[in-house]
Image 1: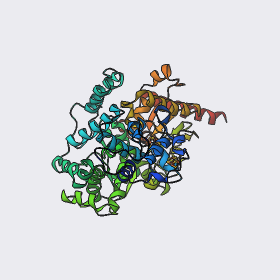
Image 2: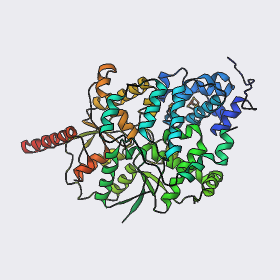
Image 3: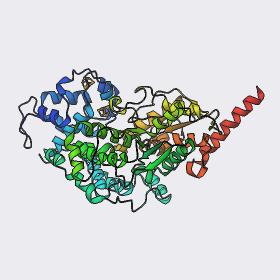
Length: 189
Length: 294
Ligand code: SF4
Ligand code: SF4
């Protein structure tokens, strides 16, 4: 475990705190550790560290924060941001840290990571999300092949989960939005 | 006639068909036009921004451009509402994302389209008196827990709608429909959204808390305004009773299904579960009996 701002990472040439600030558009130093975010966070009780500790580790530029499960399981409910006295958008901080962690090859919650990737893949392929293939892909990711069949099969027969979803007409131009200059600049850095 | 650009969102095409048809039926009854955004694409929901915020704003922004030909955009799904509105804010001050859209033939003019939820649109109609004389089948005696979830009201800087800790707009709509809104604690607690696919145990704990709060408050039904919330709240109630300490099962309906019932909209469009309909009628009957005795 490295505490302090001295750690260097292969994908970034500034210290970790600056990179978190840059990607999240937040200033983690604004946080004064009051714990209000943690008090209202619905997922905090089920994580390794609570949101205000994510902020603390980010302030220290500690690489330990990249290993946290909390950053992946923030559900972006915005309760913390709504109540934070210093206007820190913790969800954006968590999301920025996951992006850095991913670049560093550290994925503390592969299933949460799979969800966002499969989701974006599904959108990119069709322009819309197809729930059934997404749910199936997630079943493979979680190795939970039978868990939801009680719900999925009735829905399937009610025609709620069609096998072939709708594809948008202007798919070609739509897909170009994923390769925009700006998206690339940040994604590939 | 007032007409909105209507953004159904992916779930309303599949798992939440009844939310789509009941929404259209309600607005039809109110005399408000809904014109579907042509060739709309996914809003990015709660996941795309986690991968890349600029990409998320661009794909949501595409819909704003397409909608601007029709008018202000209205979304039934809370997650779509927030993604679209967040994109509108981002496009307002980020010319690079606007350029990305422009390169692909989509010119966004800042301020050209306002994003609102169907709850907000219905509530605006209520304030304008557009429900008057139209509630012909009131939901007498039905106790409704209005569940707003996260993204209809949060973050308030972007949502710009209702009170963030104790919203009342849906409660007022339910009251207008003749129902009795209950006061309860979990109106805006998170249901865990798509994390049901990541951490089932965590999500079921969150859902159990919400449902138990509604049951304890004496609600007959929970009214939802988001297909993801709806799915999480509906699924696995018997299992949660066995394993997660859920006190009792409780029906989950879309607020539009309840409003539509009171507005006497077409039953097929509303597609309300038979058991819920029996409960609604039972409560109506009780209300009438009380009247007769009194
Ligand atoms: S609520 Fe804001 S200031 Fe308080 S600990 Fe959380 S991020 Fe820091
Ligand atoms: S946005 Fe994330 S960190 Fe903030 S309260 Fe919600 S789950 Fe917790």
